[in-house]
Image 1 (cartoon, rainbow, N blue to C red):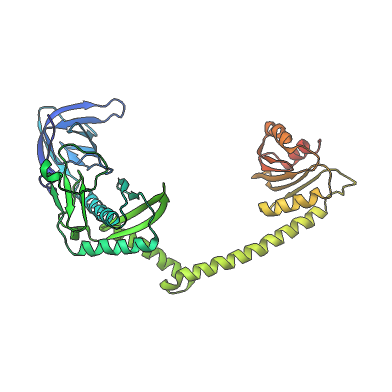
Image 2: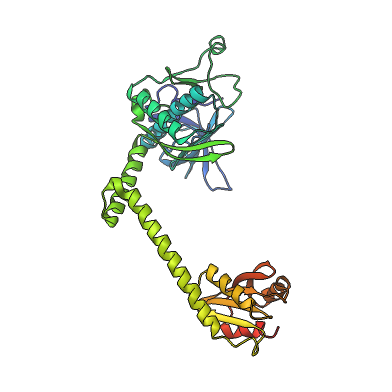
Length: 387
């Protein structure tokens, strides 16, 4: 028989008793799977994670539903045929209620304004994400955010019902699935009407507030991250602490922090450009001390500090003077070497195939390759100067 669902009767009822119909061990996970005649635990479904809590003294780790039968995943057994006490983690339940109700409000406003569908929803302990089927600009998102929060503060009722078929036929409601029976409708007057199986707040005021915390392009539409209620407050606190620390480090007012960071980054970029030019010049001077082309057809330069651009620039300069193998190696025997190799006469792609067998890593295409090795400078010279 299907499990009697208490959370539809009273979302605030977190303490209940139920009879254990079965309890079997899942050998794969080591957990116990218990079925009761009735439960207040909401199972994972509709994109929302399950309630947690305690059942018969055992921790409820997860809850699943299939064919109207709800299964509780426990960290230990409960005896079949006995009556057990259940207790739902209210803090988790109410947090999820806030997030899910806020999601409905935003999805309803997006659908009313743009006609977009909510094509993806995920609600867990860590995040709430919504995927919409079309693009939304950042300015439009601000307007939607304001609209949702005004509706929250209006303290609108959040109505839940199982309308009969004749009534359902007259309703225009959002639904991701083609539902055929026992359709539960969640309605927020003037904001949204949607088919949904999850627990929700009694009124919009219980959501507290809704903040869009991130947005990204996703499959031709957008993916939004939102935070409602306590999560929104926690998000604000974290960001407030960050901006306070940044403003203190830069010795500016909080409202000037972003501009100060931009100035700092521009200065750092300019200094990095100067430093890069100096490193290239230093490598050029070190390269000038190498044996002349008359003394050696190859040119291998070992240095302890050089970036990739400087290494490539120096190798290009060496290739204009030396007919053989030209290379710059940056690092040390202790920490390993990064390298750039170039040649106008040697097939470096073929050479890299041989060098990989000797402890070199990397690749590229003629006339220049790059990579790394843990070999010593002496071993590198032995491997290359015989070419």
